Length: 633
Image (cartoon, rainbow, N blue to C red; front, side):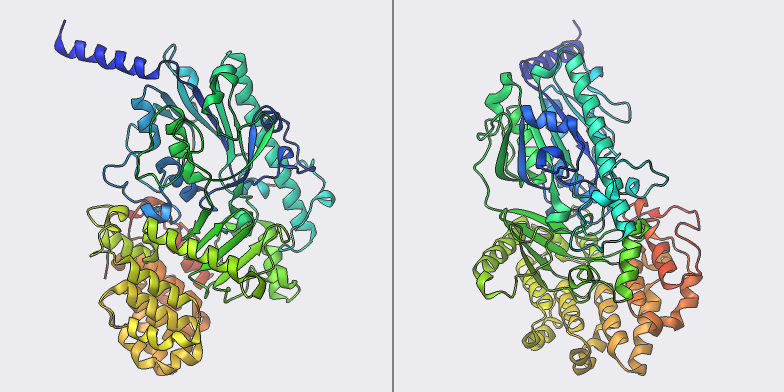
């Protein structure tokens, strides 16, 4: 027998032995919907298939996605690493996988599993070519070898945000019957969107039923562990894209057949409800544990099933970075009752004008009512600037998260508890997104953001985190300390120093004009842009001219790269009519430039159109972004 043939047979035999008597695992996922399902007590919902699964399985009452939008949420699941730690937090970005780390399907395939994904990936991490046995709209467990255990993912897009607003729609749920949350205005448009959302969740439930029936028909129900979950909260505005409970709370239903109940969570009871805090970062270590693989130490989640399941965790965490063309930096944590949010960019609203979000009728009518001063205080929070640096909500008394308890004397102990937990978490995972996105790419060149962040020479996290917390707390007494930060040797510390002065408004900026003018010649493009925006917004005519000159030079993506251009254009847009001298040049600008990935191609055109509505619509040039390293001026 030829040596290579012998080796092939040995490898095949080893895989078969590894896979012997292991459970099949089926993950049924759906997009953009929270726990608006019958099994979660929602009487308006029509979700018979998932309800039936819950009746013979168990629900997690307190499951959170890590991010309130699909790409970073799925990035978390596939890697077992927080996207703020891997660098994959920003929407549709693309960063290198940490050196020596593997995505969970690679472990499963090595253990003999046939792994399929049908069909969405949308990761912000570069995936290996052989990640799945098949990943397509036709991928199925049915294509496995005889006797081979499978791991299969089926994703339904029926409940996606885009489907809430697709018209015409045959109405089943009646708009008059829906509950309008306190943060939304009660209008016909809002009710119609919420009613259509419920109908779309029912369609996603029907997809789940189809997959469950196929398993039963094949005689595999007694050998298949089933998970059902949504990828983040509802697609309605103030759920999707916002890392509060409304954007992160997801349904998660699990079923362990009798044969495999020894692998179930310790609290598993048929028809039961678990109070365990579960996060998407826990899914990768959990699936490895269920197949007998000890999760590697570098995975940041905690297995909640299998022989390696861990004890209950006291907190779970959420995060928001750039959403399409809009930058924000929010982190959140819950203990299951209270939700704490830390807004590192309080100078921008929750409702930054993400073009895709404004396609939903609810967003447009809500915005019009706010601008017409016809919204209640609870409805106005979404649009107001500045945001509170800290938010604290009690889900027992305030399910819609509209009463901020951060200043309540009765709640200071819980505030401090969650604040401390979140700060420690950012330090533990080495949150790399405290860097501006451009700077993150620059410092991790030739490596990955995750690996770069573990080199203190390249990423002095303690100093940068302290600067970010000081800048964004809006304490007037911090001004002198912020001025000192602007002289720091690290560009990210300087960036936070400048941003901190800007956040404190006109008087503070005017008192520090000379310091900020020096920022216009800083070696860091991010420091130059932040300085120019502060000076342009609050400085005199002469200073405004200098600020616009700086922003005008940095705006063209063709010469500066897309990431620099996005930051400069956002600053120009924020200046409104003060930036009018730049508008003609912006209208004529070539929107293409070096970017981390081709998926950035619509962002600069959208910003150009927002600044100058007469400019050609997004994607008008029809030319793909160059997939090159971003230029760093």
